[in-house]
Image (tube, rainbow, N blue to C red; front, top):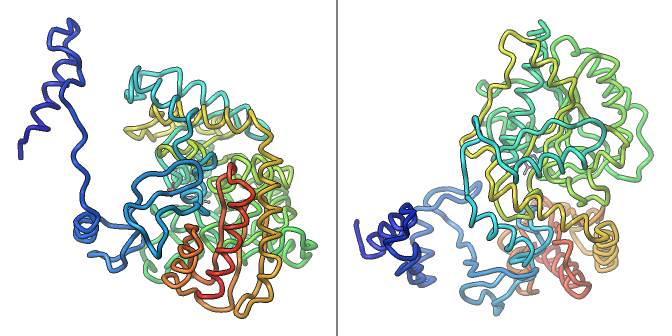
Length: 465
Ligand SMILES: *Cc1c(COP(=O)(O)O)cnc(C)c1O
């Protein structure tokens, strides 16, 4: 339906395309549309907009966020008396510097004035090159080749494709299965789904459709727990037994995120590295949630002193500004692929290397490294631990664990998400409990008082969920 906004936009686009500038300034006359009234917005949302893991039409009422700044989300209208919520989730691990950050805003704005996007086939640009150089420099070992893509799930797809193609190119096409351990999460597209936890990942819904992968038992819990010899043997044995058909082992190192929020000993990651080396299997570490300091090391693999053959990063990569992820690999993996009859990696998303996302990612990593991020992550972890000191004694609480800037309160029952969320919002905090837990991973810029508030909200959510 053509309206005056469209007419103005068309005129502005023509003006921008006219190098003489004869049509006047490109932005003349354009104004953002008037805001929707919250009730109307929610009605349209329910009718048209699909939300994560939600039915259509929607059945639960989301909170409407009007803006966000620092660590606070501002709601369009108050919920349980709160107009502002302290964000305990970093928008799913991503907004590590908080919202509306002047440095990141400026990085996007500066890039916006040059170009928002150009295709990456046959063209390249400085933001992507800078970002790739930075990632290669930060990553452990010789992970020096970088494939920039749109999302974490796609980064995992690319990792899988790299590994399978590596073996195909070396004349070993039978090596095409993946091994992982239970309790993991690697994304919602098809290959990643096949290595998600088979119970939590709804494998029963897809039996007969998903590729069938090799699953080891879930790693025993506890970052500091003494490594379990029987489990180490189980890992080695599983890799050895399936080596002839395995392209790669793929796991989340040290912290299993959306598959159940469990921490394990870095010794298990080391054992996988050794078994993969011994049996000629590639090791993929999915650092999409754990990367960029969240666990107290820049990458969680650092706790284990391990370099994978392929590594996926995403989530915090752009500081939560734009969707981008990356798959890094070693020269050995790349050389294997190059030796095949099809020597190219046959993958090329339309928005590969997006300049806006690359620019803000490079700025976000620069911002992270310019500060003592280790101290900030430790401070937040200490604050969460202190605030949760009494939580283990609450009725219904099974276990409380904190690692880096991540806190998990595990319950002895399925959480009532609505009740737990309501309790957190009443306490002025945004949390998103699921399964049998309430958990938080705050932005690194969260001040001490707000960390205490998040811990109190975790307790309230655990009590009422
Ligand atoms: C979130 C996540 C993914 C998927 O990333 P998306 O950007 O949501 O596609 C993959 N692996 C891990 C470990 C994750 O936490």
